[in-house]
Image (cartoon, rainbow, N blue to C red; front, side, top):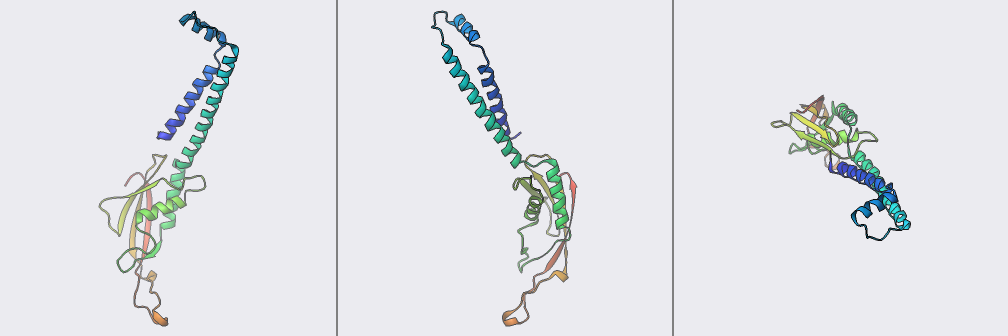
Amino acid sequence: MDALTKLNIFCLVLSAVFLAMACVKADRVRAWRADFNPSAPDIPDSAFTLARLLFVTIAGIGIYTSVQGFGVVDDMSWSDDELTSAVRGATDDLDGYTYQNDESGTPLYFDDYASLIEQKVTENGGGDAPETGVTTEPSDPDTESDTHITVTANGTDKTFCVHVVRTRSKKDDYTPPGIAGREGTLTFFGYRLAVAMREGAC
């Protein structure tokens, strides 16, 4: 249970206490007070009315705050079904995905497989899923040609392992046009990904 959820529950419990205090009858309070301090002056009914209004107002604010807080928690948290659907969608999107590397061997369109999978999982989360909270961790040791990435998300204990295999794809090479329409001399090598998923950590 995260800290915000604990705070929301605490606010609800505190609100219930204030509501219970507002329901205590004036005669009972006077009797308790007389037992502890018989010589104390009597409390007027207006004081009890004011106290009840104060307790009910505080309880109402607490309940409203808790409800809003639970809404925030829901917006920040992934459910089991949301993450399962998002990882499956990301796997489908990336299976057969092609890209090119620059002359240093770095992909042109993304930083690494972990960030690419995180982006695709978030994109496939659907309307109710958060836009943040996905974590992708590559296994060690892995290579650029064969890697396993563990996917988790805030709010769910579900874990998935995404297996990425890269193969050389010459038909996806890209050679930019040269100067003044001449044939280019630099070729970016193309690659194709085969991606599969399974439940559980890698």
